[in-house]
Image (cartoon, rainbow over the protein chains, first blue to last red):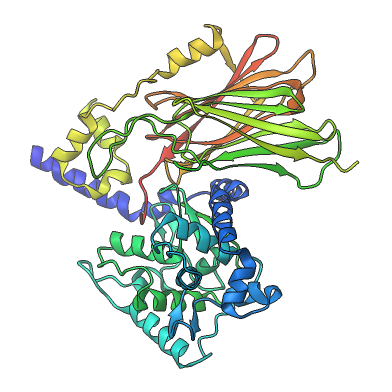
Length: 256
Length: 111
Length: 156
């Protein structure tokens, strides 16, 4: 008798799973309510705090000077990160660029995974708000290589379940509901993920960068987690950002 | 938390005397329920939550709130307010550990 | 709980754990209760002084049908009532009926608010009714409620 109950239960569960997308997709009214939360994004406070940290280093002007661009051209320049910077001899994201800037001015750089760095790099990236993402993967050999490597990281199946980024982010599954959340279209045609990170994660109550989010994805999908700022991670950010090229930067985002 | 941050936002950006505006007060606060355990040490994280918020407009208390630990981390409080001349909006919050903090925002009606 | 009800109450949320013993264990485990724990009926009684709160369409409670995350659930309450010196909405209370401490917030308004509106974000431990109670200056209480389904998360 007990056994029968078990079998029946399993059957029920499988049946409900296959209809999960219908049952648990969020209504438009609900989604609108969550979108309204953007009006008061707690991350605004974190970016303000990041702005204060940057003030101690000389503010926006110091970033422009370090990058060798005029202040009025800074926003558009930042919209092109990750970039190959000769000072570094490699492709870097904004956080590593800031580490270099701190190092040059004799300060101990914030760790990539520190809240200080999340706050400050998010503030700096938000200076590019309203600019279209203008990453140029053909700018030089380094960017070309980074993009190709990023695509490889994106496509490589890893971990216990043999998943790649592509498994959940390919045209055939976009919009499929994974427990109330539609799998996002990472391209500029869709919600342009790269343009809305760094974002406040409501489940974590903190601010996360794109690379930090990649780590969360890897962890949950049982892939070995790639370190922040590593060539693999930076390349993945290059690939992801290029996919969203042209999308308008709007930071900080607000995510489940 | 070494540094507590808060922010007052007024919508819309431009308003006149007599308008009703939306005022949001945001604050970085852990809103600990006292039920969570530290993942590393296994010890219970003590309660730490905002228990009151007060909105004062030009010295007059317009709204007070009794707050419980059941609000989200980094909470947001939004109310309406009738603009009645230029001045200052002051928001004060207290938490159960005895912390008291205030934030102010200028009220600048156009006309 | 009857076995049949228990089966019915299983949402998709629990579906990933198909092992029956662990599920029944989870269902029977007592909920942790904090120092401020207070059941909804008791909390409501304290706020209204035992008076009855009438269900009213004047109280517009906006919460999501499905919370994408129990840690941040948006709540907006609007009360269609004047805010004049002699007749106004004195307070708006928000309750999460199944949280150990059912009280979320009590907002004490004044005519200077212009309109009786309040919005915040609350934590919900499980699927439950959210209740908004409006206290008018003449001492009457109006209320509205809506169920919010709390699912477990997707990718982190």
